[in-house]
Image (cartoon, rainbow, N blue to C red; front, side, top):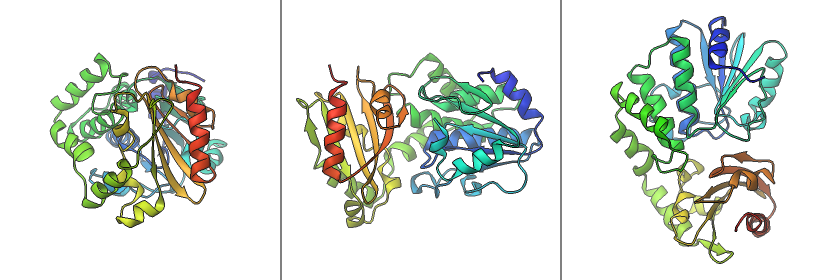
Length: 321
């Protein structure tokens, strides 16, 4: 059921032990949300652990405390909290763990994706530019402070999911929270650099290969990039280095929708979608069981690469004016 952050805070304060889950292939908002909430629970002296099924991405390994994130919860769990996860399936291998523990205890879902089906017992789903905006409100409802470390976690999420304040869902609230986090000691220049500018030679080489082969469809309104396993191997790159790739072709004047097609394994591709002004990529992703936001969404597609491109191109064409 839907509920207020105050009611969620009351339930959390009653917990004896908490496991915080976030989505597979986590980004800055996923880690920012989960680690900031964990820090607040530490202040309240509530034992807690952060869990994600995926190995820590190389591009986010700089985050302090991220080495303590577990792949599975340990010991007894009195309360399960999911943050920045649009549905149970996005928990990956932890989805079964979630369902098993949920049979015995309460679950909480704090998220910002409009596609979220509200799969927990207690749900707070509010569409905003970053789930860290929701978590910041929850931390305040818990009566925990936003100290420098917590501010840094939250700022990582805000910067990541707002596209460094470039997305059209950035509001006065987004900027006001960022200002509050900077006042608390978060170094916005440092995080801007490590999240959006810093890169290895391997990432630079992969970026060059991928962007030299942008394909355009529908009068250049759709741009598609392909990130194959072979391309990554050829420059000794890995999937964690592809964060932000999909935003580059969206900068082309004529492009309304940009799609990144990344090979996960043979005949399986992770699709990342972005739109500029009017196309609802949440609906496009929804055709294939995915979702997200109006301007940013994702899904999985299966088949040979050219088949996947053809499917996606046709679907996108239905949402172009």
